[in-house]
Amino acid sequence: MQESCVASGELLADASFFNEPAEPAWLADFLEEHDESPTDGFVFSVRKVSGEELIRSALDDAVASQTLVNLEAARQLFAVGRAVEIARENPRIYVPVGATDRDPRADEVDFAVRSVVFDLSQRLNLSENVVRSMALQAEVLSSSLHRIRDLFASGRISAQHVRAAVESSTGLPDAAAYASYDEMVAAFAESLRPGLFARRCRVLRERLCADTLQERHEDARARRRVVVEPDSDAMAWLSIYAPVMDIAQIDSRLTAEARRLRTLPGETRTMDQLRADLGMQWLYGSGVDPKTTGTSVGAQPFVLVDAAGRFAELLGYGPVPPKDAARALREAPAFRKVLADPIRPAILNLDTTRYRPTPDQKRWLTLKYGLDEDAAQFVPTGIVTGAEVDHVIERQRGGPTNVDNLVPLKPRLHRLKTVTRIRLDPKPDGGIRVRTPTGYDSDPPPF
Image (spheres, rainbow, N blue to C red):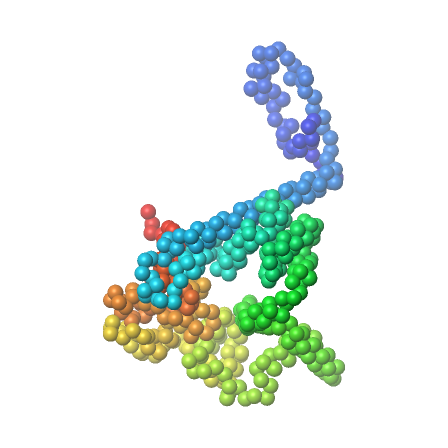
């Protein structure tokens, strides 16, 4: 049993506390002035503290800390919401006068919101999607889910609970449905973990708005997509967002075929491995000659190989095994091989009479920024043909079409820089310098 010392009043103290002098100077002076014994009126009792008491103290500490985490999360979320609302009401903070003349499709309020979201993402080191989600949550809590808002603001539920409640409220038909939903989810929010709470919220939402399920499904179906997420060890995740009935059929077919193969003599792969291999075969096109397929020439991925052939990297994704790189280069002409000298001699600097970059310039920019980790959040991941090449100094202001004056930005960031006061400039030593009209500078000059 761990030993500790407790004075009257149940204050935990380290044993070294009692190694202090019995009468420190201030106490001796006080006692001499009042002519009292050091123990008169105050008696110490020392006892052992049980493990049960110590663990209860640690558990109470954890609970109190979680409450503080919830309170700080609520404070941040509502601050993000206020910032977005202020930008919406004051678009001139980010969007200069005449911006719509340069881009007639630009909406000032929309670009002000985009700008503040980008500003916050840089300051908080969060993705823009996360910031946008936080702003939406703050708006929904303030306008429709008042009980959930109060629970969050008092630290009684977590940010995960709030996100689940808000996401599941999407599609509620009217204010009455929101009020019913808010009342019912608030009743069990404190007693459920976030995962189970999210499932209960989804079920409740469907019960409250079953009549609109088909319409909501059509809206969601319009957002179907495929997402690639690079992972470690030369692996990646492939996610498909599609109607659940279609996904269920695919899942069922993968499982059934994997079970059939699992029974064949000599088959040693696990169910997970079989399902993954089958999915890749079906997507790649079983029986199709890879030499005759692949992406277009304009979307060639770069495979970087060192001179000795010991290391290979798929640009934008990360290292790949040399054998896989060799196989890809041999069997799939869609991949472009790059050795130590990545670009053959080419004209990379042009005068101001030409606006559009040449293919050689685009390839050079692809390699330069694809290898620049500090610029990764500003350029498209993987195949960089999705980028829009931006002139750092605009052409109408004398900016040349030279590689030093070009940067391949994500399309949305290219428009953001063009329409708003936000600046995105390449740094000589790599990376992108970000400056916003609210005073943020990712690379401020030294004092």
